[in-house]
Image (cartoon, rainbow, N blue to C red):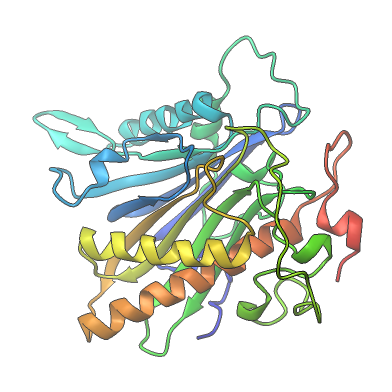
Length: 331
């Protein structure tokens, strides 16, 4: 397993990502869009999720492909970002055909960033506009750290952010992860600079620091956020041709990566969720072995992407928490 050329989810051919930010509000939106509709699934393990159109992603539903996936700040208000994306896709002639009408299918998930110090006294919900802007910005390269849906994110003691990573497997398949990290738990070990995800790091992508020599195995964490203020939302993607059932299994396995990178994760106060996306460009040579490997790679990529999000976060005036770089330097 090695990183793709960009070490971004867009190393999965046919996918693009766009970000839009409102820095005074300290929030943003990230959109993943395909060149054509793609298979998608979802798995939720947190106790406080916020979603749009996720019921549609069950394997037995009528519509089997989606046009885009949206990650946004803003709590339930941020779900309106998907409306801006859907409007723009419909104007471009994309969507599920129902007679003469087109209905873009745009599932979305949100995180809570309403109490991060930003100016939330808007006269009009900004997320529809941010969704349209993020879609318009979609491309192969995009920013991580204090960007997109991770703009206003926080973790236990450090700023969160937007992260991404990719892997090319020996069987030729590509896997990528995209994540907005706004966790109740900690991404670093014991309040130090080393990342829980260190065992899965490739090419010193988040400092090459390894794990500390010791940490308290019996540590009992205390929640530092209130109910509804945390959530890590992610997308894992592949160029493999998967059924929706197989894609859902990949999303389920990817949650292992969240648990490896954030301690604790999947708490009653988090809305932890993973979407899966499969473009179908490459057939599975061995359906059993390949789906097994895809689950492992998705978990490893997601762990790496979570660490990269916090590692790349930028300090900004008025931050309620320090960035990793402001506190520990650049590794």
